[in-house]
Length: 546
Image 1 (cartoon, helix red, strand yellow):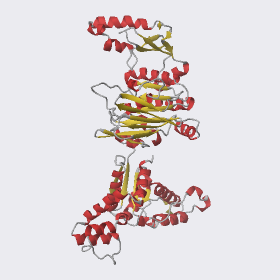
Image 2 (cartoon, rainbow, N blue to C red):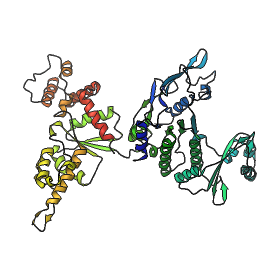
Image 3 (cartoon, rainbow, N blue to C red):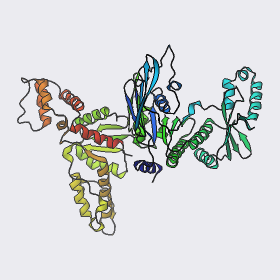
Image 4 (cartoon, one colour):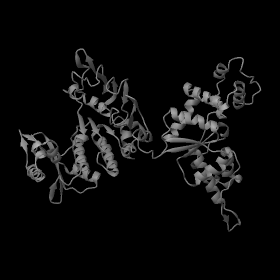
């Protein structure tokens, strides 16, 4: 089993729990309306553009810490209340509900309910990771005002102190990563450090700074380490320090990491979840992180004007589209007529699946699709191409050949099966078979293989609309009578099907039939009836295939 499958299994069996199972944010910053976050997997990633509200979510979760005040996370002044008027955070923690609500008169945060007694929260803010060496230039006025050579000398002198053992007030300020932590960092980074130390000090500007000393062979140095190394060492240390059954919040762990390191970092997260039974909530802009996770782990924050809307259970491809990354597993649907294309396209738009699924109409009808298109796709093992036929093309399901006895898998069996499923004789197909030199006739084994390959593709990549013809799907006589009025509505008693009915109605109204069809499709989308739900489920199934 993969790490994802193991975590899923442990979660379903209740071995790992999401202690925070639900969060609702109302009237806070971009969340103008109530936004619900349901945590359905021990590792949750929040995906969205800059300014979509990801930080607001993680800050609201930090309010669950004992003896912690909302004003520590949501700063406000007399001039600007920061967008918190009547803001509200609702939580479900360990099955218990509680909330914070902001009032204007008097201006304060009110806690309704009781904070959990034992809910450790570790928050890892990667964007604030600046090493002590860098802080000397960023924050120390003496160093910044000095000449370049003096700056270098200053940093060298101060850096030498870091290798001492700083102690202030008996507080431990030097941490050496354990062998296990060191091995984890090396595995993620593909590095070979023999020692890593984290040092907290005030050697530069009087404010607390952090340096990480990486030892390769005999030399300790932070100067030659990149921000990615600094980041990974800190993340590993903080996660291993975190209490079992706690919540860990991580802000953009992909910063300065190449894709391979990002993949390994997620593998480490899953391993930590298995070992420590922690719940992790991660914000990210990385498609490499998102693509590794199941949809129940992905929450998308969508910006729309000055508001943000929340979408749960998002497949990776949709998340990619949200952050502007190319969709790596896009699908294409081919239909047999332009009416089917119009219907499918509108449902794709309504379900927000267009970034990952496109639909095209191939002239030539179902016969050409069956004889040439499907045959080509099946032979070349193309998995991201789908055909949706009108409902009248459905014959029988493709049988599961694994359940058929080998002695029964004869050429005649496959030929009969082909005709029953596809609706045409296999003899009409150009299988491109070689002659059997021994018997002087076509190679039967090749034909069996070709038919089997074709039917296996047909089983997985060929679908059908819920009605005989597309016009049947959207035809709504009650709606059409309202449009036409009693005087203009034609006699349809002898019409053969809904297509002919639409033709007569268009003539009666002296309108192009395409205009009538678009009106019906719009009404079909608005009503979202049974056939809409069937098509929607079909398109979501296609979009989620890997």
